[in-house]
Image (cartoon, rainbow, N blue to C red; front, side, top):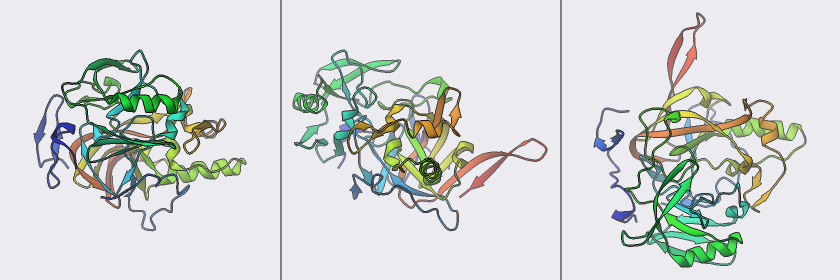
Length: 333
């Protein structure tokens, strides 16, 4: 299903550990999909045994658009395989997101045998992974500038029509050198077109708490798709992820870099591509403020590649404080 040119080789039974500049083997570290898994359920029931498990997985092949929800998916250094490796840019090569064009939410994207399949209400188009012979351009994502490959011009025309603005589709090849910021911790990791980190994790309990507060104030509950996570964990208490530092899921390993600061994208109804008021930003500000920002979910780095699945146990190492004030590391499942 995955062309050799589309990503590093993946071995389902093994793990790989990432260093800053290379990928090396190590055993020392510890099918089918749905496009609307998050939108179909506003809340989820916590595990009766309080065990941590993967509730859902979400891949967004095209940055800023709707993605798909596989049952099992490979993980490499840049995150979930193919996640945000395609991007839409303007005439200056600057990325377009829902912040500047909320109609991005009206575009669907999945990985097909040939490459990327994008869809709108009017049509569907298959786009091949660009070869090494296609033209490149200089693209910008926040403070990062790097060379990307230009994708099928037919896709660019389709995207321009949907977005009602000039747009060009580009793709990140494996040899693209974009690293996470030093603010995310060392060692730095290669990252896709994602804003900050290779993966984003949220919990069902955090959404349940938020929806309780929203409904208490007279607002409507919202689905998880507002937050565009890659990995959703069930069985945790609300806020528990703020204390997680490392995780093991399936045969892959991760580390948490920092809480995700949220912007106005979470106020966009992903089914209509329209802003839906000040919530949930306003409600999050009452209990999840971080200076002038609000947080929801955690940025993650992949420390060892592998495969993760819905239903996998999640093993975390979190830090708590003992009565004398010293730190204690706990392992939770």
